[in-house]
Length: 342
View 1 (cartoon, rainbow, N blue to C red):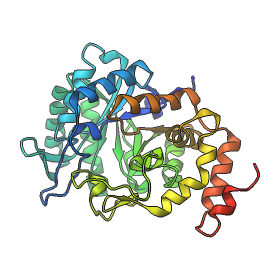
View 2 (view 1 turned 120 degrees about the vertical axis):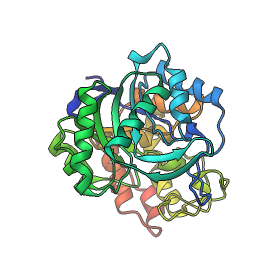
View 3 (view 1 turned 90 degrees about the vertical axis):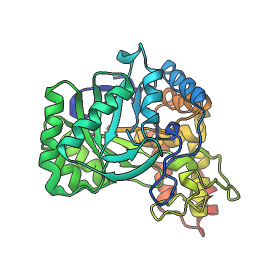
């Protein structure tokens, strides 16, 4: 198989090794208390151009969710792939209930009845009659709900509405319980240069699953476009002071992570790679089951991320060198680490 392609776990579905993360193109989304859950206002024409450019450059795996922009992301994707459905592999998610009028996330629902309604609504917005990968979007769903959820998803497979399914969760125990479903083929987990996920990867190896990596560029931090003085607006989720948001705080990048990135910058950008391409190359080198899905909202980002397909994984030597520097990094050793001979 080409280094630009990977297999989506035991489903056998072939996908581009880098995907198109479509959270950002959904536009604004809010929690009931007014917390931003989207990435600010978007230009739909630019989003469409970015999707089409990504397809031209070989990024054919598109990951979204019904809740992104309260359905807006799915609708934009539907417009972009009209007449080209057989060229793409589409992943979307379910479990979050939202109000499309106010673009507000209201609650979660994983009942069989709701899963069926959500699936049909996503199919309509996407303008397709099947979804390739349908993913549970409630990361902490109780384990006692697993059996009925699997049964519902298997019914959707039998009806031809979905091809395979997975769970967006960072809990190895939960995904290990989900694999009893014959068509469970992937876990979507947080993973990047700063946040490795060895326990999730172990489950993937044990059960022949793909690891679809959300946050592969640490919400943009690994692109190198942010400095210590950068500030993001409050309508961008990165501009909020959220407990789970480790890469940014009150709209400012985490200074320790910026310093860690600086320690490995030279290695990641070797061979003509951009910083983002190097960070994606690290993920591709980490394990043959990884499929990073960096967020893309502009043509320039599509072109940059597609460049990671051309460059492929970091070499074994580069990967080892990055690991050596990162895993022993501290503020006191950063300067010394950057000047060690290679």
